[in-house]
Length: 257
Length: 274
Ligand SMILES: Nc1ncnc2c1ncn2[C@@H]1O[C@H](COP(=O)(O)OP(=O)(O)O)[C@@H](O)[C@H]1O
Ligand SMILES: [Mg+2]
Image 1 (cartoon, rainbow over the protein chains, first blue to last red):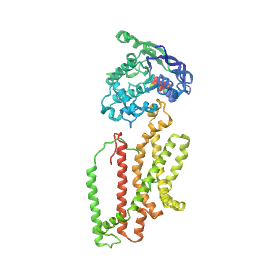
Image 2: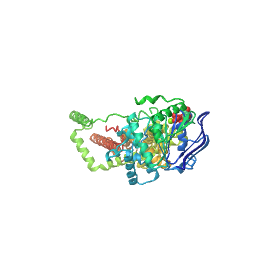
Image 3: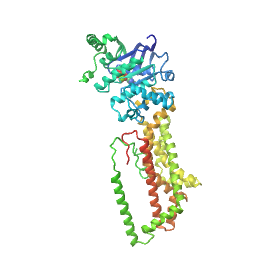
Image 4: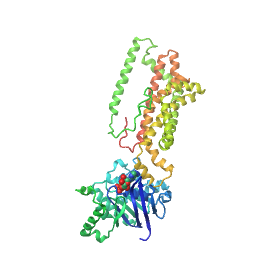
């Protein structure tokens, strides 16, 4: 864990006079899972869009794999991929064809696309020739989000970005998917940035939590070790500290019940 | 949509059907059709007993005429079908491209849109008369008339389709950093296919009738022209015979479109078979 995959240096982003991200600096190391945690409107998605290279910073520099993701947009082809809150599957493509989207864009032939897509569907626990051929409208919400995650991983990117990918699912589905995804990403040693507004999700999944307060500035940084994750007392204390740094927790914490 | 399309000549164009249950009405429809056809045939036959032959010929006479046409004049049927299919295929491609350009190239949008709206306002009959003045060749005339009438329908519907393209999907495809051509192939093209099919479905019957009409007015080959000839000769069984064949051609091309729709839109939960 020596190489920085993402580096933000004093990044600002204004929308008109309104700052969405202000003086934000952090680095994400290779193989790390980092959570960007903050309340709705804290500027998490704005930060993510700058990392993706679809939004230009107003000030400061963003580097992904040493490249400027906005100015050198095409140079990062195949190196980063994103999964969103909603699955965003192409309705005319079957499950495996959706997973293969990135491979198609990278120019792989159809047979390779197919075999790799099916492999990745297995990795997210979608198996069986029948399921693999289903169209998005034939799949449940949880399965669609699994397909969406497989699509992000299928190009074997150096960096995986997740914007609230688990927050639209029901509690049970979300929990199972979080566990499966974290296990998979750790096993593969992928670098991952996940955006969430849920403190418990961040504590459960991330190696390091960057707590953002609006407009996105670093309010607190928490390292989560395996020992810490297993210690209810530590988790409780961190939860309280994070909630305070965020400026209170969003309403939907009790949703589980 | 209502302001842009001439209500006098235009068929109702609907956007792709909203989600709805697919029901099998086939058997019920079949019974209805058989009953109606039998009633019409019986009515015509009964009428022919009391009316002179140039008002209403008997079924036997009309059937005989249809057989004669199928044996001796079938080339006109083939001509009409080929004209129709070629003009629809061309209009589909050209109109869809115009629609895509309207939807994607922002600065071009208002100009092309104005042009398309003005074109759809010109009555079909005017285009037929223009065609007679502007073109000597028969194929050019019919092709011009059909293309100029059909292209705007494709352009407008595909344009609506492009506008309805979800930004979420655009964003997710963009994350893989595709070329422009890949965006077209992977996102835009499959997205507009339903719009193209719905347009084809709603114009094909209209286009078939327009083909016959254009032939009647401007040329001397094809089903419409032969029908005009039968009228000149006071050959009523000829007029009815050609009419029945036109109805069959019309239903045939509609069946082809319905089949294409079912195949190409199998990914949609709500493919309507009706
Ligand atoms: N395209 C935009 N135009 C104007 N304001 C925006 C835009 N995107 C985000 N914002 C503003 O920036 C702030 C942060 O938004 P966002 O990054 O979406 O927050 P989060 O993802 O943490 O909920 C909000 O106040 C939002 O209104
Ligand atoms: Mg957000």
